Length: 221
Image 1 (tube, rainbow, N blue to C red):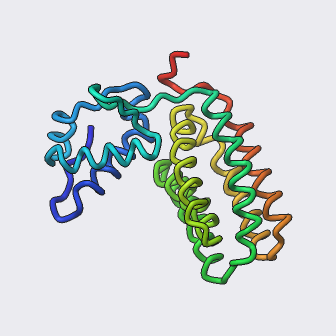
Image 2 (image 1 turned 90 degrees about the vertical axis):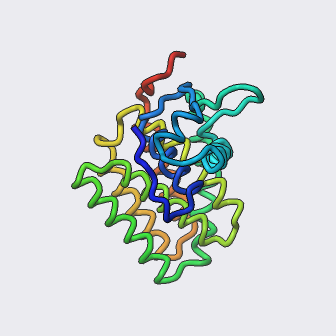
């Protein structure tokens, strides 16, 4: 069930966040239809901001749109997972290597704050907040390179990838190990060592792949 949105905020943005959360958490499963009338009623908004939200979700790759057909939650297969892993290896290793030239104390503090937030989310069993902060960690590294396209691509890929992690139910068993890998990435960046930053990022992504072998729920292929 979706929560009714407060009227004081931008409705399209809030609808986007609420629906994104429902998709990533598996409330809406791959292939599920997204009827505008009933979803707008659940959110307490009109169809206009809802359509804007759905269009943004489609841009993120979380929703499929076809002319004349109802929007649906995008499908996700293990082949998709392999494709996203390969893209992450290229883009995020490059991102970590490039980030070294832009490292500041403020940037490192931001990374450490996301790490601490993830630890607190694990302690509280809040794995949605955990993945939101995980995405923020990787996006921060891409963003500091001052390449906005790199940041956008990394953000889109992580949105898709974390949906798999939730559907596959692998988060609880892998979260602590992933945080240790994040700590190694932060240390490499703090040392301004581009080669090591790239290597620790690659190790992290390869470890994520190793931990993500379970088939997601709702996948009929």
